Length: 229
Ligand code: F6R
Image 1 (tube, rainbow, N blue to C red):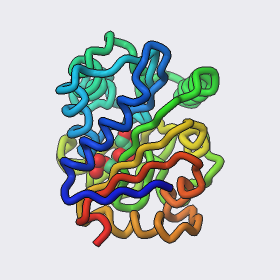
Image 2: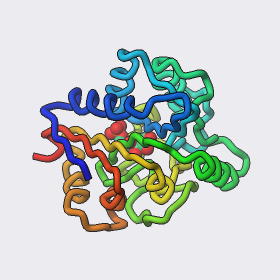
Image 3: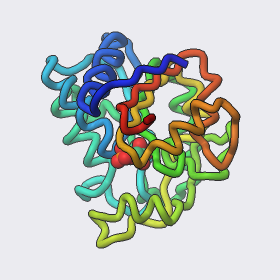
Image 4: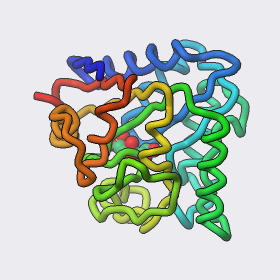
């Protein structure tokens, strides 16, 4: 694991943008995260003229939310990632949270990622240690699937949903994420401290899914002081 500690979140975001842009190219396959943490990274990449890639995948999507809904991750990918980074509309594949057969949708996403392996995956971290929406209890070999969100995640992400985010999501599994050749994990702010420390302790624990990333051969962990001190 390559750990870099920065004075503030903005510096960590810039470092993530630099690391990700090193992989930019017409054949690149990216994995993008949603949430607040990577917004600074996407803004920095946009300032640098965007990135090039052949295809990209989102980590997750809420079940029951239409892709046109501003609260959906599909909408986030269009407005925070594709347009600012100068990527053609539809570059980022996001699971369809309204699919009539959600298990088939998850399996189809998993197959697509298997056939088009991700070169570099950008990740944020839940304060309960979740990666994607792999909540506490998630095993290392989990694949893309329908999951129930932890109550604290529903509360943390509830601002746009009158307090409580949807009950379920489709998420890439830990096993899916671990297949990416490079992982860039950004964790900033004191709320992430406990989860960051679990990762740094190096002991794998399903109750802290992020700990499964410790053995990845190319994990770049970018944190600010608040997340480690
Ligand atoms: C995002 C995702 C989540 C977030 C995590 C942190 O696609 O799957 O794991 O990365 O919940 O969210 P923020 O960055 O908002 O603290």
